[in-house]
Image (cartoon, rainbow, N blue to C red; front, top):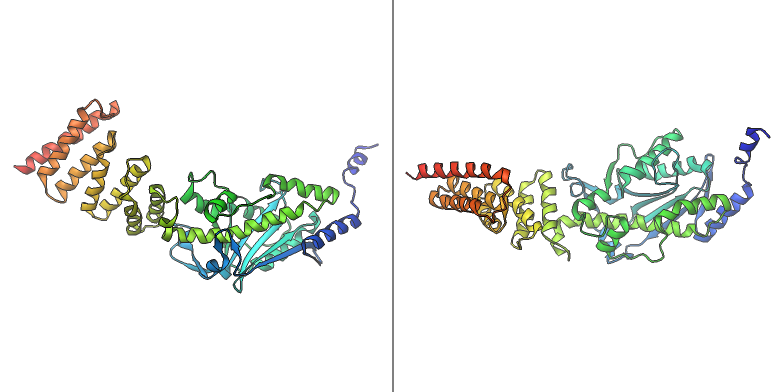
Length: 407
């Protein structure tokens, strides 16, 4: 037997009757339809969610009533720009592996669209690899009229993978040039470290009160598809489609939560100085210093000396100083005087600077400098040894200048 005969043992063509029977049985079981054309065939399952549908504590009606989303709520680089929900497409893919390399195939692609007040999820299932062009062509027809794609980790995985599959078949990707909202990055921006992790199911549980029971674990999904290809076992795939469908629905509701969070964050049960800090920094990156300062101000009154409050106070002081709100800046610095180490020295020195340059209150400014020098000499100051000389020189220069101004 030659080596080519040996290789042929692994390239036997499977009986088409078995393939047809497996996919037909699966389609009948889940209520889907077989779509056949010149490029091949695929299984299509469309599920429509009416306005009264509830996903956890939220109703679909409350989401679609907004009709638009503001892209500036999702990306600090975007200016205020409203996009209709009807222009958006929500995408999630189940694949044969966790790599976006050319050998990985998306065997199930879920596409969600808002249509006439309903949320419709189209799921495209690939019966076998040769049928992939037919499935991709059908996906293009739905996506090509949309302007915004929403995903979860899609920038790193789903979209590059799908675009690779289109390129492999010399087909033009419908996602080219579309604005992409990756909710993973949006959620990490506001809630990283807040919850157990940043997975989609954790976020839907914590933010939407959605609890999945008997859900198909993501790590098992590739193997279930391989079992179907080898043995025609379609029964477990119903759970895979449900998993994918729930992911798509969660994308819509999670996008609504992210958009409303900036305006309604205080209503969250877990709202804290850390949340205020992250919201403020988001506005600051957008160049909106006034909104950034307002977001910080709302939580400055709850200062309790924790690391979160300390960081928020420092951030808030810098914004107040930038806006010329010197009285507010002095009040914020007063809270920082309870801190230790260089933060306390900074608060005393900055208070002296404001009183000297902005308010011309030299006596008060001098008292803050003296407090700083006394603290610097204290054995409880906790100042790094290599920073003592710097602070001593800085404070002594300010003290001398204030003495000259008072003459």
